[in-house]
Image 1 (spheres, one colour):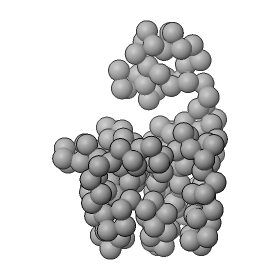
Image 2 (cartoon, rainbow, N blue to C red; image 1 turned 180 degrees about the vertical axis):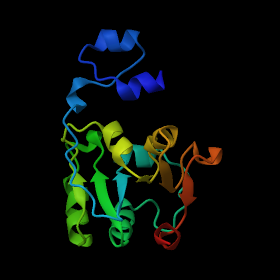
Image 3 (cartoon, rainbow, N blue to C red; image 1 turned 120 degrees about the horizontal axis):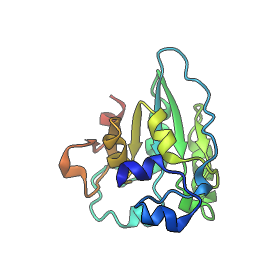
Image 4 (cartoon, rainbow, N blue to C red; image 1 turned 45 degrees about the vertical axis):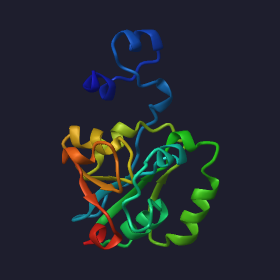
Length: 173
């Protein structure tokens, strides 16, 4: 079922449902990322929505899941090309987050806006490393054989599929 889900782009909900796959046509825009420079790794940070973050009961990081702080720290690491995917469910309420991001992150970062119809699975596949503050995208990245870094807590953390970091120093080392 999962393999079908990440590889299917169906515009027919009932057919997708019957095939146990649900990826709608709305997320089929080409990825179109610039090519990282030689020696750079493509690192993608998937922003969790406020709803996702509220469901994480255990705050284990020193900055309590401050995703802007995570992005800022990642953006300052040499030899990475950072892509930030704003959660699609934040389409109508990402302004405050994006304003904080623009104020605090000065290094070049490729932002994929919430309303961009890019398929997140394509971004995972293109990435060398996938980072989030608790999204299930870490588990999906691990399934696809990608290095996965979890900045915080998630129900799947105990399975050892992601490197779990609890502070910015560990993240950037």
